[in-house]
Image (cartoon, rainbow, N blue to C red):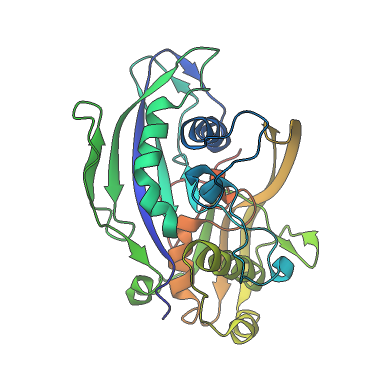
Length: 318
């Protein structure tokens, strides 16, 4: 089993400095505020100018990853994925009184993990959740083992120190996780997948697995400096034999404003539970690992989040 793809998961806790009325889906808001702060702090380029050091600039490496000189053309990839996921808890609230905690998960993948101190500094300066003034401040960050749930503090505002830690999960680690019965996938946030050039509305297993394998392959190639050594055609053929026997998902439309593109965007995707029949053993490590990389469009800001087996929370109606 390939071990090149590796991730580290954190739980970030912000403190509301004023009463906040945040969007039902918080991931996009957090992603926008975080990206602006990261660029301001980590990139030497002035507004509107290209970065003078793109090969070493943390912002360029994380947000604008470029093709390595010896990399193949992007003909087999939709785009280069960003090596992090910001995921608000599925059962999060919209109303946050002053003094309350605004918590979310942060997953760093591959080389993004070496930039963790940059993420901490950025999170200390994150703004954009309030109306023209500082609305939140960073309280603490815990590193959380994805499989066991064990956690420990790596940063608190009181100490203002980043503690060293080596808690990670590789694709190989996931090969030891026993398969769940019943064989269900709970899509907790809106999941947007394409197959054959069209958006799909049913979570057929081979479509979900194709998208996941494509994402893991891209993350491995562009952010872990290694190719995912798997039999792609063979796995996809096996995936076609797994049948969707119960589809309890529903289609959700969600509108968001993209500051980067300067326009309002409407997204559609499915959320809910799907039950499959067939041999899932060849795909299980990828499915387990993908719970923290997410799958499909918008994974960076929390879309495409799923859990295997019994759900930990109800699907969001974003």
